[in-house]
Image (cartoon, rainbow, N blue to C red; front, top):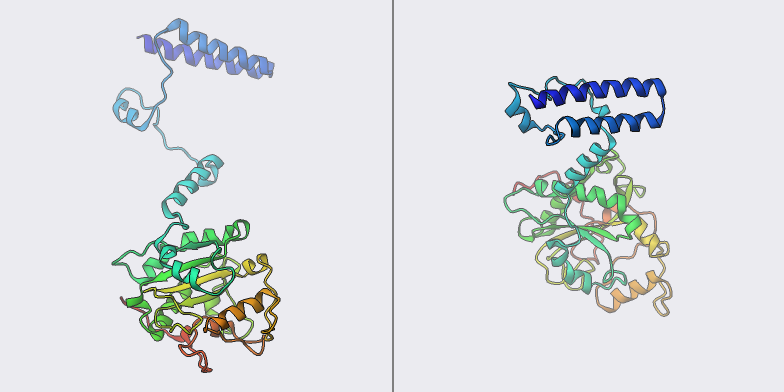
Amino acid sequence: MADRVLTISLRLTSLCGVVYAAVTASYISCFVWMGTLIASVLLIHPTSKVRIYSVSDAKIDTKKNNPLKGKPENVEADISDAIKYKINEDIATFVLYDATDVESLHHFMPVKNGTQCLFAKKAKLWGCKNWKIGNTLEENVCRSIPMFIKFTYVCQYLGLDGFLFELPGKDYAADILTFGQSIRVVMKLLSDYDPKAIHCMDKSYIEQPGWVFQFNRITFFVTTFAPFYPKTHSRYSFGTENGYILFQPEISFAQHDIPDDTPHTNWAEPRTIRDQIRVAFNKAGRMYKIRQSLSYPMVHDILMPVHDSKNEIICWWKMDKQLAR
């Protein structure tokens, strides 16, 4: 009975408050109405508490009083920004991960520390999600796409130098043809899921000098490493067992102030960073190919032939065979 009296009192008080506020149209009236409301609760039923209903409450009290009765007529556009933000935050937490502490980066350390690139040791890299045994190559790559999207949004602001995909060597990088097929699967899949729908891997001019791999409108220089390359090769993987595809945003080169590419090298007195890197590779006995012209297809250098001295081109982007492992 007391609960019923309280309910009637609250409704009458609320109605009076609304009418009074509408008539006076002042902030003071609102405070008076709120004060009256609180007082009515305390005086009429001192032991009562204002109740917030939940779904579980509705299940219990449906026969007596169901405060959730009636479907709202809201549409998705009516959802508040706070709720939308919370939804996005929870989804991101579910699909993202700590890309700085993954197996791929730990396994890649011999390459990172061993290569003659002057920036490699201090490079800030993110890595793919840990490989899930039993999943296909495509399924494993898809697990890392949300983080790759995040990478493209923050790489410039965080000064990131690359995103690394690791492929089990036995199944996907045992030899250059298998690795070429694997590279195509990875890059085609990323291209298909490009948020900006550029789909760079589908371009007819992929073999032309103007083509570049891009994702979410970020352009990348793509480098690969594999266990079948000899110690004298610039793509030597320093004893690691797996294959690697390193996506380096071109903006990173600008942040490191690396000069424009040139076919000329000052071997005797290397002054530019590019000259110093070339000299370091040469001294280590793993000289990489220097193009005599700046107008060449970038796609040719993503997967290098085992023997650098040969003018062989591995057409990995034409390898349509899917890997069913």
